[in-house]
Amino acid sequence: MQEIKLKIKKLLPEAKLPVYGSANAAGADLYALTDHDIRIGANETAVVHTGLAAEIPEGYVGLIFARSGLATRKGLAPANKVGVIDSDYRGEIRVALHNDSKYMQTVEPYERIAQLVVMPYVFARFEESEELSDTERGEGGFGSTGSK
Image (tube, rainbow, N blue to C red; front, top):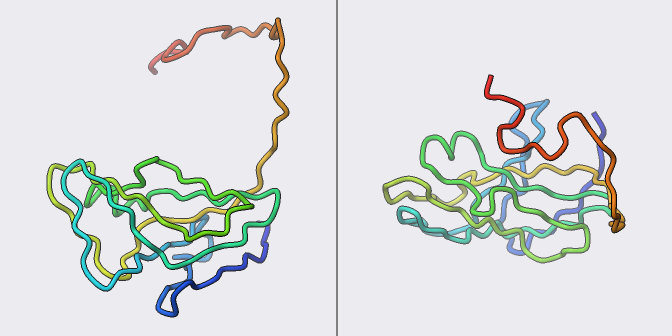
């Protein structure tokens, strides 16, 4: 496992730093920074503040994923499914939580709302081409490799 230092700035003193839930967790929990319950209606989205900003090192990306327990128990997950924090972004980390359930859901102050995974990425230089190499699969997609 590779380890890097990640600078986190508390935008408000009461903000809570991300915390890993176990020694081998890939994602660090992000906490809601609010002084009141946030109610999210069925099929609605609310932007939840964390009160944190990060300095993601160049060559890395911060990815915001759902917390499995929150998604399965309350139907709350990031609206964009995976949030992307680029290395040149210095603003507040906010999570747009979408309620996929049929019921009003509540986010409590300092509730764990998402998880942050920091990982390296590859920068692609896109090159237009008239031809692509042949493969056995070819243009088959959306279930073309079978269902079992």
